Image 1 (cartoon, rainbow, N blue to C red):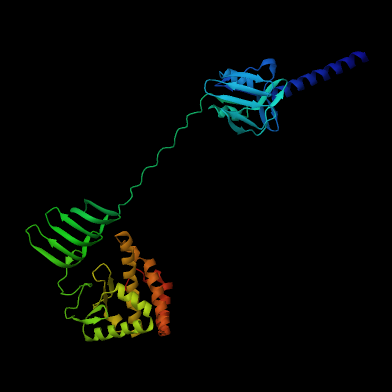
Image 2 (image 1 turned 90 degrees about the vertical axis):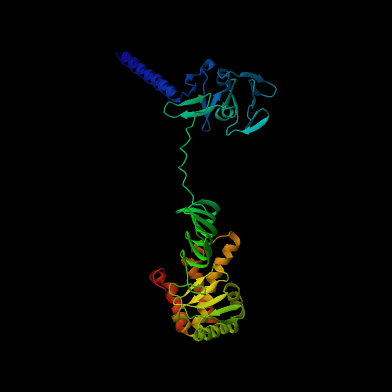
Length: 399
């Protein structure tokens, strides 16, 4: 009885061992397919894992792919060939060659049970095959042609506003000249559909500055236009309400002064202050300001020839230091305009009238006030303007 029980126990143990071994073998088995067809390896010697890399018998895979596989016993190398390629895989060598070009392997080829075993991905991919790994089924997937990758759809092109010189339709006519962001800005000629022709300076699609208009009936007029309308004053009209009594009094160095006697005296005093207290700044003013003109509010007309600084009553009747600093300030805006124009041939508004341009002009105005020992409250006012642009910028003029 005891012998029978012992025999039964031993039989159960052996069965468990065989089942466990079979299960372990099944789990460790690595499969290889080519275009979905399983690769059969002679003598049942299939792929193995060495140092974390799957090594696959060379002969079984490459012969199924139509290659000839030979063995060079002297070189200890597998020689794999077809009409296009010669692959040389040498045992214990980290490199293999394709048509003579060396390629490095992570794990060298090895001779296992008289079979050349190699990490198969690089040799196959080097001759145009696609190799992948299915971890769930533990299968090396070989595809004779790499899967077609569907390219992502091309992004929808975003129209880029045109900047440069061209002829194109615009708002009731055709404009030939300088464009900025699809709008006439700069010198050019506009031909309206009714036959009227305007040649001169354009700002935001309107004649603005010096220009000539010839109407369809043959009559023409040359002068200064403000937002498309001719100005009636004899001098450069930089204002909505020009002062009709203004007259050219004379010049100060190269700058023409246009205005009444009070305006002229105050302007000369301010220019003299710049010349005496900041000679380098004065040279900049002479270069970028050609006319200083009395008006009802202040502004720099940099595109005119010569550039014209129109000065309102509040500025030219202020202290000499403040008036001088205002001239310096607007000379900077003229400099911003002309330096950009000399390089690019056109000037976007933000280059010389935007907030960054204004901050630069304020900074140089402040440096000038400090240089000439201006009153502290004038310097403080510049500081306030610099630090509080959100309050005053693009709302009301502060001058």
